[in-house]
Length: 85
Ligand code: F3S
Image 1 (cartoon, rainbow, N blue to C red):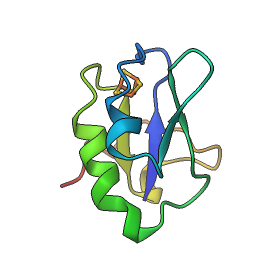
Image 2: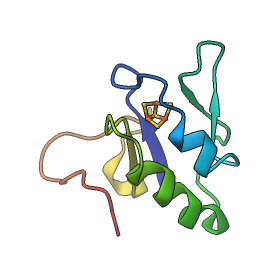
Image 3: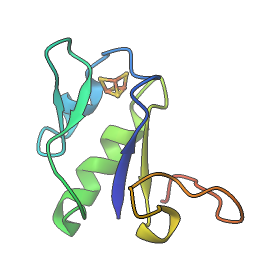
Image 4: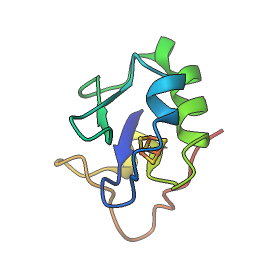
């Protein structure tokens, strides 16, 4: 699993890094940036889901690797990029 951030949607509410500080952190403007790179460790998935679900701007998604291309961007086409429960 990987976390995908749409930085254009982030308004700096900060719920994500308050709820999952091991995964999300603020940049110099208070907007989200990732504190982890690459594959999300399994032990961080529960807090990550909470952080993702609590973003009021829907700027965060938790995605399986199969839904991302080699640059970590969401593939278009037949894969439905929904938040997984
Ligand atoms: Fe931004 Fe949402 Fe977090 S608006 S700071 S991604 S809670």
